[in-house]
Image 1 (cartoon, rainbow, N blue to C red):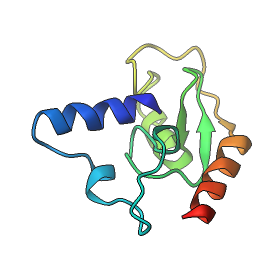
Image 2: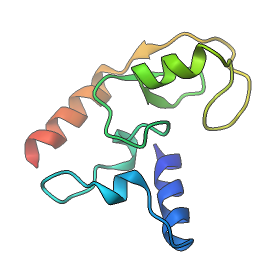
Image 3: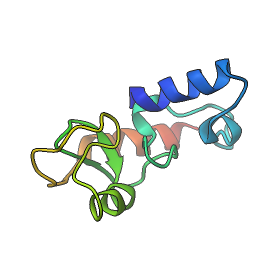
Image 4: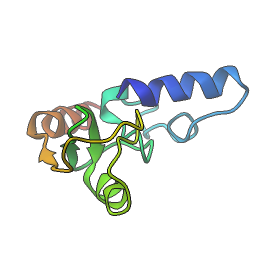
Length: 100
């Protein structure tokens, strides 16, 4: 998501680096921000959409929602904690991986 890219850019300006910057894929090209989970900062393999409209890696957001009912990105209360598979995003990620 954009938030992951924003975090990486902030870290870079502050002299730090994100995990995504430290470990680009073997092809050397970093994945698009929308392919990176904002919780794990890693390429998603099982992306799901949450009520806040953002995509997360399923296992990461499930762990988050086990103890919280807020959005990891905004901190706002989620209207519901349902998660929905993002088949289109999963397909785009796989296509991007295949092109690397």
